[in-house]
Amino acid sequence: MERKINKQPKLKIRKGDTVRIIAGNYRSTPEKENKGKVLEVLLDRNRVIVEGINMVTKHQKPSAGKPEGGIKKTEASIHVSNVMLIDPASGNATRVGRKRNDKGQWQRYSKKTKEFIK
Image (cartoon, rainbow, N blue to C red):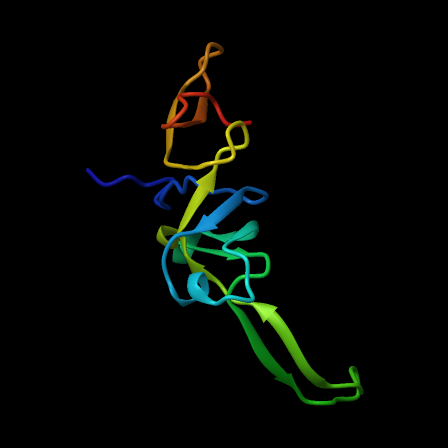
C-alpha cells in the first residue's frame, strides 16, 4: 500500500545548520571555505544552498525595473549527499540519526557523541 501523505524524503540537514563539504569540486577550491551555513533546503530535489559555496555568475540585462544590470554572483545548490552536519557540541562532522527524546518527540542526534542536536 502506497503512502498518500508525506511522500517527500526526510532530510537530516535543516536551514541554519553548519555543514562541511565532503565531496565535489567546491571542496578543493583554495579560496573557498569547506564549511558554511545552510541558507535553503530544496526538498523536492534533495539539494541545499550553502553560504559561500558553489558560487556562480549570473549576467543580468538592464531593464526598466533594474537599470543597473551587470554581473551578479550567487550560490548554486549542491546535493545533500555532498555535505555533512557539524555537531554544535563537539565541532566535528557527524552523521545524523533520529530517535525519540524523553518527551516522546522525534529529535535529531549525533551518531558520534550520541547527544541530541538543538
